[in-house]
Image (tube, rainbow, N blue to C red):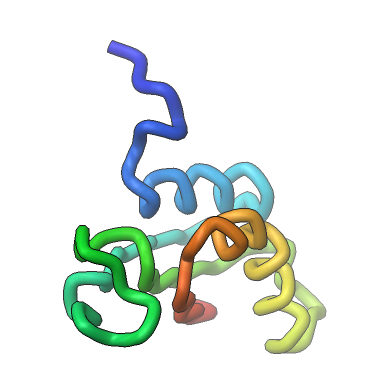
Length: 92
């Protein structure tokens, strides 16, 4: 059964986007939205507003920490524009 990418949970869509754009050697995307219920930017569903990304990529070689974060933010900008409120990035 094929599911359209836009019907997948946000964490799965973020995972797919980062895999496509940054070719990670390690990647974990965790939806931490439920832990932020009632906080600014949270929604009533408890999903899709607060994400944690742990990522390693060969594209990060020779880049500063800020440049690495910028690559992740750039890859996910449309998700941010559509309501992703918080994005924690751990470079591994």
